[in-house]
Length: 135
Image (cartoon, rainbow, N blue to C red; front, side, top):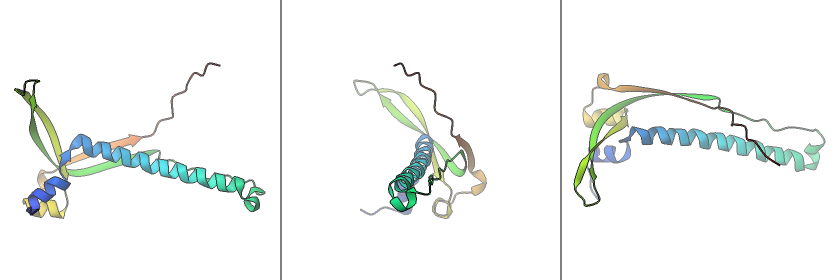
């Protein structure tokens, strides 16, 4: 299936901004989960290995307290047609699409970097809520 460079860029890089932010959040959560899993596995090894058990070692736990994100993006607004139950046009829903600026996007689309948008976000971990456990 032949496609030109612009179509390829749109297929791979251009996505709704909400999708990009959701993926970033999921990636950070997966990273924290991998760190936790490593600490758990290390603690199990320290607790079950006869040679290591005598030293009363504890696994080190790592925590991502916060992540600052700054993305230079090309933002575009598109409208998706919304249909009613009888397939009639009910209205148009605005969708904000974003594409990360990189050399490929810039050269293929003759994009002026000065017109880009900068998105800044901070993801901060919070302690889990306390649960009332009734016995």
